[in-house]
Amino acid sequence: MKQLTLLSFLLLAFFACKNNPSTTANADPEAIAQTVHQFYGWYEKFVMDTTKQHLYVDLSGKYAVLDSAKLEKYYDQLRESQLLSEEYFANDRAYLEACEPIWKQDGMEGPLAGLDFDRVFNAQDWNGKYMTTTPLLVEMQGLDRANAVYADTSAAAARNPKFELKKENGKWLISKIDCGYVPVDDTGVYQSSETACPMQIEVSKTDGQYYFSLRTATRSQKGRIELKPGDPDPYFTLKGIKGNTKSDLEFTIKDDAITFQNTGNSMNDFVYFKECDAKFVTLNKVAPPIPDIFKSKKTVAPPPPAKPKAPAAKPLPSVTVDKNGTVKISGKTIPFDQLKKGLQSTLLTYNTLPESITAKSIGEVGMGTRHEVQTLIDEALAGAKWLRKKAALEVLNNAVSSKLSTPTKLEVVSYKTNGNYALLRTRPLQPNGAPVNYSYGPYASLYNSGKLVERANGLLKYENGAWKMLIYNIGTDEIPTSTWIKKYGAPKAVFAE
Image (cartoon, rainbow, N blue to C red):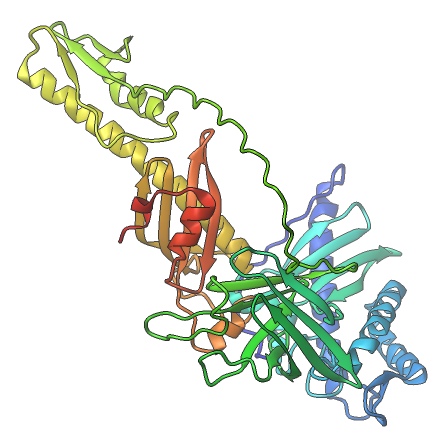
């Protein structure tokens, strides 16, 4: 576990609570922050006091199990802080009881306080000053409930605890500390039904040892799984699945899904499954009855439905100017000083922007007038293209930020359009311009293997007045051109370097 980063912020306290006097509105967030700060100040002394009992499990057997007597004594000591509600102890007991079966799985002990990790700090090494002085963001939940987090937007802060509090007898008490660890049973069947890569991995466990049963369109293989500590999720290594590499296939299981990189690139050429035409593979956990994704079914294909006639294409806007200086956009007169703004607004209603628009002269029009009109047309078209590019970048950035669970901005490497399709190649950065921290989260395994490329690529389609995100990938500079063309109907030209 990494040491919590020390940051200092101005005191921020936000909440939503209607019909409260302003004095209460100001007092509640301050009192909530004081409760959290005081608790961690008290708790740090408690943790460091060797005369106190910190263990609440029996470690005499092969796996840790809850010891009810020790747990009650541990809770009685925590009650001495006078900063925790009885609801906290009920929540915590339920959480530990849910963790207990998971402790029996090798490599997934869960957060056991008193060993090499403290689950209340959610860290192995912590910074007491950070936990007792960093301001909190507070969101009121009615008159006597609140949620709170540390006012820290750095990448490392993603591991910070989250708090729920309740007011009892006029005093704010902590009712829950959420450190993000959720007990999960990772055994089961995971499948990918993609036609380019049908695959099934069954994960089982016997006497604490994990095993796998793998099946693809061309092979079946069974073996042992080796678990390695991860941050926060352990790495599953399928022993014997090497492909053309020296290393066994490795991945994490998160949100009931297995994701791994199947092929490399020109700088790091590798492949695990040649029979799988996909760079990244995702297998989702399926519930019984397990579908047979490999079963071939011979059916008579119905005749293809008649293709509906495509609607007539919307004619591109035209701009005319006559000898009197009257300007029209597609036949509608517009004031000369409104030409640029009016044409740009018109262009943004089209799914596809033209490469250029040339002004048409009606009668004898002076060269200076023609030049001025054409300049305004060119500026309007350039502005529309810039706004369209900006909107595409925002759509991709929203997807990347959500996937990485951290705020980002994108540095454009290339942007190419063809028709109403766009392909963006970008580099994700933190809002302050610093590199994104990939050492934890969904791409930690790829990052730790040294195979991650700081790239995010997205294919978008403009329709109905907005960009639609078709597909994107992160962590690679490779784009599966043929797959994206086939699946989304994108023109080849948009992928040209």
